[in-house]
Length: 188
Ligand code: 6PG
Ligand code: NI
Image (cartoon, rainbow, N blue to C red; front, side, top):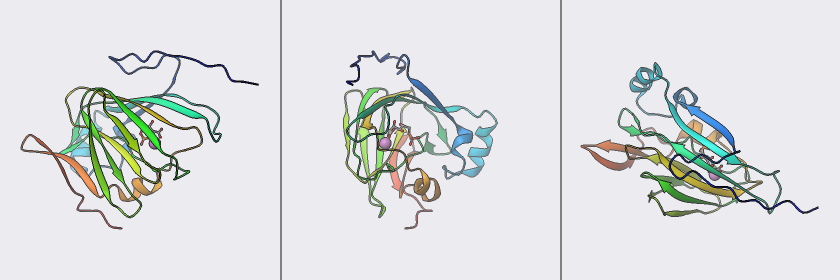
């Protein structure tokens, strides 16, 4: 039996996909992810929403596609800009496409060996995430950073290694500028 095709309209102001499954990540869900533990503890009193995901997902089968928007709120923990957890795909060779809709930010990508790349994103930017690269988005602006992701339905999310070791680079604000710097805690 054929599946039914569909079209949905993303709200380009808010990033909401009507009818999608909503996931909310608050600061408390990101324990251990940020460098500055004091700043983390302080902001945890408010426990702000860091990002929301609106996902339209299919059964995890080879050949099918999922899509999701992410609304990544502006903010910092110490000098570090708010970011998504970041992950490899469980099927590590599954690639992904991102498309910038609103706001300013970028993507940190990393190989399993710790080679990192930073790609700036603004409305209209397409980012190709090749197979095997971990990926995390970062909001470097002062409004919500909204983007669409399209990924194989069987890709899955593997959060373990990033949760433990983080990325080899950090995205921070220094003297009012966005800087991508080495992570002092990074070890292979
Ligand atoms: C995916 C996409 C994307 C991502 C969200 C939230 O594979 O589903 O990369 O939708 O999941 O932007 O980021 P985290 O999954 O890293 O929390
Ligand atoms: Ni992904």
